[in-house]
Image (tube, rainbow, N blue to C red; front, side):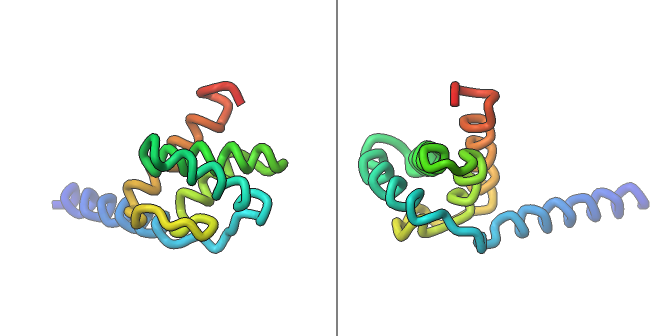
Length: 113
């Protein structure tokens, strides 16, 4: 009986964490990053998936303007719209997957920065 209660508590905690991650971010991207992002995203969205563009454009534009690539990317993952450009509605699982892609792409463990 105690094991079932413990499992239920762990499941509830996991759901709480996911719901917390899905809340809209109060952080914003700078005007310089947004200008770059809008240009990048408009050229990217027709060739690949929106989340791929979000990761590539936010991280690339953040780094090009002297900001943290991973941080800029993760801020964009939790925003809709991003810099005035509407993307797919935010889903908690998509935010987590997007953040993981940011870390892989821009965190120094994947492609060259």
